[in-house]
Length: 455
Image 1: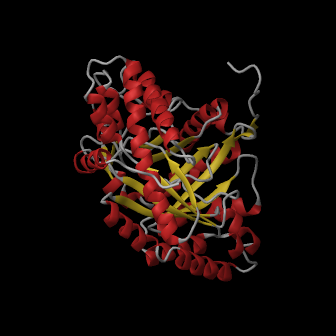
Image 2: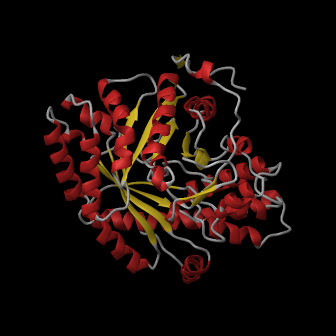
């Protein structure tokens, strides 16, 4: 059914784009690589390169055509593929770095800035392919420019794989050291999930899940600036009214995202997947989730009341977005990455936002502890325990949570590590220094939670 827009709605959208940083944050083409798996690693690499470059050859030019037609910026054009642990396993290889190199080369060829899916799903245990991917992660992330990785370590139904969590603490430390000359940047391309969605279009955690079709075009909208402007227009409104204002704004943003996504998918000749409703901030002034929370009445993000304000924001965005699209998925909520949000950066520097408060906020938002830096000498066991805490929040609350942490080599609390571009800059946050080592080294799997007696 065609979507009709009134002249006033079109003018409103133009204002949002020009003055309030409205954009389509990403169009992400999902590609199944299951038919690329062979018993020979070199042949698998060749098939991966050929299929990705063939399927995504027109992604960037088509997205640019749609940008020009509607006048709406599409900031990123990206690719997500089948978790590589599944694709590489039949080869019997123990080093998957060549698979990462093939993905990197294909991504460069078609002109996308990131390709996600160097991933494994190990929430219930390891296969030989998962083991090979784990062993390859630090070198793959350090030696490639565009490849992003993710690992799902827990689900609400399977529990939490603490063996995987313990190893990831070491892997993150090693990755940081291998990319020390870039502030530990390799860690910014690795996300550890609980309840990972299979259709998430956002990096670094995007992969093309095993339940997905051969191809799918997923869209991630942005819009913190638009929501911020709407909230600021109602300084005296009660919170019920503000929730309705945010809901209406999210409806408009999502409808624009679906319009653009369907146009791109039609021109590419691939099925439309989902719209991810996430509010994705940038370091630009006025494009900050933290500033929205402060506009709701908090002196600074991180103050008491921040979790409640974020819960209101997240729920209103979901309600408005769900009304605008029949196919909503991915992460869908408010992102709170420290390094990518100017308001979060300021709040950390001023001492208003601590790691403990950030963790509490993740109980009501869409992702988790995202893009934050800790001292470079933080022990691997502490990083593992930090991941376990965040995964437990997702497991118990039946939601997606994730961790993307950078132990910045040579940095200490109060320092800042620069990543540039959308990845921004991260003030190094202090971490609780009491040791969880004995707990982490127990290993095993924390059992899935009881679903009855919820409380």
